Length: 241
Length: 231
Image: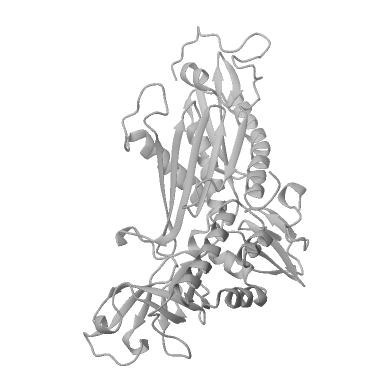
């Protein structure tokens, strides 16, 4: 969030640098069941983001001190590969990956029926292979498909989309330049069928009116991404390619 | 239900694929089955799988699932740990099962459990009880329950086991064409016994099924892979 107001990222006709209009999202493709050894997995290519999620479990939670007697714990690990950005990232957990792992776990816990698996652990691994902007949104979406693919009972599937503000204009699904030089960012996680909000973060300043526009853009992007998720799960279960 | 949440199943029996969160219609006059919950008068699918409506019961047969032990299930367990008077068995479930000495094979004295069943041994046993935290106790007291001293134990996904062998002819054909003894356990494991060549024949067919399942092939193709090759 650089706040460089002099970088022109949207023209007077509302066309962005990559040719999208304000409400357009980047091309999304999803594939389920990409890792045979995992209980469930998914690959999400969202613009230039390339994210893979794998789910293992439910399994016995170790160490025992993390066990919950009445429900399972979701152990989410978000990680960016060292080669995922132009500057090499130091391998291992850092402050940002811990934060994203935590918010992802909390978003998914609201839909996973954890009470069916007391004392267990469901491990969710999210690996970002190529990062462009919006990796946490792609990660949550990938994790949601991977959980469904693993047969984990869920009341709904979570889809995450971010909108933000560039040159004073609210736009949907920021790309790298827009994320770096934009003025605000509003990632949201929404249940696909019920429309319930399970995750919201905001970076930068948005007026109440701008917030409403960003909210509407995010909500509007849920249905098309949900359709792609369903098609991916159908393909992985014997549907047409 | 919207078209995007459903399609005709691959077995052609009019089953429909549903995803978690898909609305299955009003709950009034309908019973909630496996993989379905009721919320505000609506039935909601909670698993990815095929929708089955049997009279007034609505359920979802999951496409992928972990084995969940139920009392009475026949399972093949592998001894993971031994204590003075009990064994811990890996039964392919989230939690290890307990086999107390009193329900174990034959007679053994306190402290002598390792002499009867050591780590790595496979046993055919039955689920005796499962508590609310999914801990299970197994028994080896029963007809045919024993230590598996010969043959091989192979694994296939538990959800495939039921689909593949729902027709008993498939198992009969597998046994007769390979001249092997085959025991199917409910936890996705199968015991194969016979001469070395026959066992390797069965294992190669099972491996084909595993590869086909990873490639999202149809159930018919997997059943076909279990049949003897015709030259």
